[in-house]
Length: 142
Image (cartoon, rainbow, N blue to C red; front, side, top):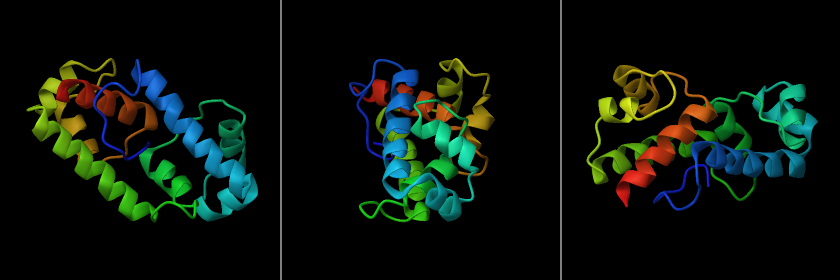
């Protein structure tokens, strides 16, 4: 789910999409154990434990890809990060969107420049920001 293409039908809102990402990540952490996940990612055990407990700790996309990479069924974190960036950029192209249009339609206070930096991986992006951007692009592709 984290790095899959979206068409806007997967979630009713960015919050719903973020919850789906968090559920996927929590399953990975639960399967390998919080301690092992902390060792493998460098993320604090309290944040990983909160994730497993159904809470929404603030995570970056980079941290999420590191968690996902702990799963034997997923590629390593660098590949997932590259896929995320590629899919966002391709989605923007397919939906004929520019970063200013995306920024204007987000609830967060990101500027077009900040969206651009996040989409290209030049600035950290929270999972919440990613869900909002990913959801908007997916909806516009329909």
